[in-house]
Image (cartoon, rainbow, N blue to C red; front, side, top):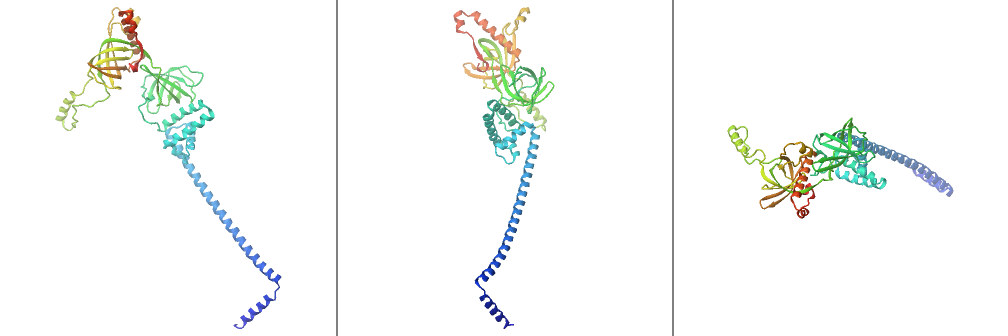
Amino acid sequence: MMTTLPIIKDHLAVTVLTLTPIQRWDAAGKQFSLNFVTERWFIITMLGAMLILISLLLIVSFRRTLLRQRASSQLFDEYADRTGLSARERQILLTIASYAGLKECEAIFTMASAFDLGAARMIEESLTRQGPEAGGQLKIELSFLREKLGFTKKSNKLSSRQIPEDRKVHITRRIGRHSDEIEATVVENNDIELTLKLATPVRITFGEVWRVRYYFGASVWEFETSVLSYDGDVLVLHHSDDVRFINRRRFLRVPVNKPAFIASFPFAKALVGDTGVSKEQPDAEQDSADGSDRAWGPPQFIPAVVTELAGPGLRMEAPLEVNVGDRVLVVVRLGEGEGEDSNLQQTAKTSTSRVIQDIGEVRHTKAIQNGFSVAVELVGLSDTGIDELVRATNAASLSAAAQDTPLNLQERTPEPSVVQGV
């Protein structure tokens, strides 16, 4: 065996040496072709495997995205149902989420900053494309939507939630040919909606903006709102926290000298004599109750003088220290025939004095020599009560004019006065 291998090697060497260059090149080319074919199939196989893996990765990623979007859409619908959004409001909110760049649309229900950002961009585009009218309409819709989501900032501003039940309001369409004012009565007012009973039926278009006016004493409240539901003559409206004063009535300001009484009338106050003894101690409780009787009771009236009369606005002088915005009770005695209807005066055999009683709100206060000069607006008056005080003001003005000389009359000509500024 050992002698055979060297012989074979020598024979192969002699064979290779006897080959021509062309024969050697052909032999090398066959070996190269065989290796190239093997490597090409390997590369094709690897590329196919990579394409399959990439395809599987894309399919899995797409399914995850689809499932995430489906879950986000379900959460959005769930939150929208809880909030009571209409189809129009849902579409607006989705658009806001898109403008805000939120990947998960349900996050818009909890992100006030994203809502404000998306709403601002949406309003800007609406103003650019559709003009100021559509932009104004969109602002109102966004205001309602912001309140529904609870993004409205709490403040001391007036709100439609403050309108008492059984009060009269007047509604009219904000846009449209039919702009007749319709009288309605507030039958329910809660934190969610304002329910009105219309005096006459009316055709309602959902999404249409209505203007509501509420005459509160000498003030007029006005705000825009939209319809939640309508059934026969019962109209349910959205609330608004954007209530404004308009058309405040002006009255003559007449110097007078009328006796009156005034009392502080706060909503709540601390009891000085209340020791807070528990009910487990009957004897001590009785002693505490006796002490409390001396600390609480009906409002304590103080004599006062009305020095100026301006319809529901009074200027009074009294030794009572109050602050602007405080509530007071006012009792004023009018002169004979003042405030009475002219027909009633003609039929009455005897003329009697009248006493006016109402709750007031302090608009201005100033320290004087014998106490304080307090400007009060009577806020609990009906339209009839306001008319009566207007007649009393006019009667006082005529009486003062009859007693003055022409020169003094010119000097004391009564001037109109806004109630809040008396």
